[in-house]
Image 1 (cartoon, rainbow, N blue to C red):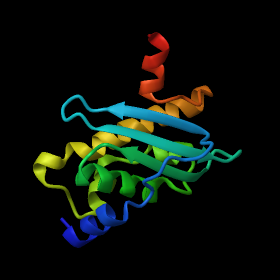
Image 2 (cartoon, helix red, strand yellow):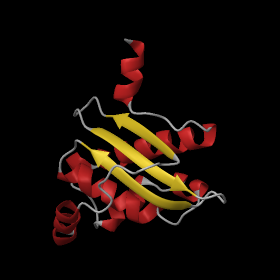
Image 3 (cartoon, rainbow, N blue to C red):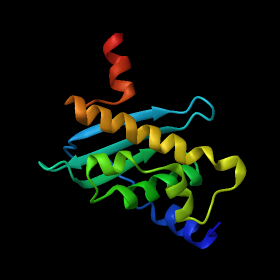
Image 4 (spheres, rainbow, N blue to C red):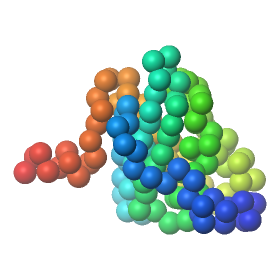
Length: 135
């Protein structure tokens, strides 16, 4: 694992921001560790991701993995972004420690939810907003 690159991603928090007026958002909650991942997308008329950002309550591995996703997905079409694999994310850092290999899967699940919301035309609020509507 490339620890200097990992530390740089965690320190710089590339892409860590709520996006004003996203085309789509999506959330994923990991019940195994309690992390929440929110992905924000701005998609142009041709289906290309113009901008992507994230928010997470996760640790350094969650932050680094989300930052990698923003770098890999920006500029891709929605279909190309949907094809990003955990192996591609892991390769960015030269691999993940065995007990952290589920982080790319979690972050890609958040992306999948966001892309599903985009495709369905749902702007999608946060899980907290959806829960509030139930009460």
